[in-house]
Image (tube, rainbow, N blue to C red; front, top):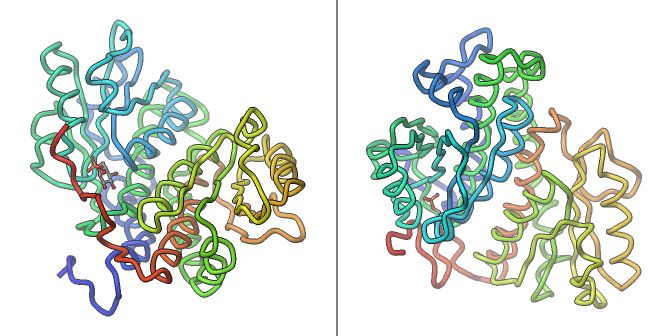
Length: 362
Ligand code: G6P
């Protein structure tokens, strides 16, 4: 039974380990043997008719949307906005003439997101729910649904749903971009890339001992930590920080690394952990110098770097996949760092205090 923990001490670890298979499952479900996306033509037509995409979600799903924005804009050339559902519901931004809504929700039951969908349906706008739960409320009420096929996610801290959401956004963006003749989309070999992602994820989850040691050396002794990066690395740093705070109660923040010096660097003292994501060629040097600035103020820094950008002394090397898909790999060590910090503090990893898996009140 997929909801059985088996020999795992906690569901979260099992779900982290399932991610390579989830990537393969998504490729099998949504791509032909030759890597051609198999997406309902009516959905593609409706999205193509839109002049702007609005991605709406909460928590980890919101963070998956931040990565999705980059994918839709780069591969499909459609301007995309990402919104926190509880904010959007009561302060709707000015909409474009032909909006299309994408709801990201693992459970399909988040009340804040549903509130937005109710308004969207009242206004008669088309929508898609990307969810892990068939027949969930948001799935039933949206115009279209795509399923994540990640299997039940039991741990409160979301892991495989995040990576599944990003992979499915990539498939959808590729399909849309191809349909409108975007060269970047045509050149993007998604089937091969998802294969590389699955292998890369496996290599990372096989380094558990190393990650447990890092959690012990860097995160166990501190009651705060910073994840930093630029662009898509910033998006991942927000998710990395959320993982750490929700299960280990370390006050963690994700920052755009260039923004640190405009205030937050004042918080850095001796031994404050600062973890930098470096997966994008354009900003690698900048994030490195931002890390150095924190080091000069006493921070204990750690680098999570893609192989082709690595230099001597980097702490954790990620296998290379297309830059756009690097979040699928860079988030995995952050999930495991959070897991081991929580575990070694003796906390209940799967059921952190004050949190619910699915929040059905606004
Ligand atoms: C809760 C969960 C989070 C999740 C968020 C959104 O806060 O604890 O892990 O990211 O809800 O849930 P959804 O099911 O809409 O993705």
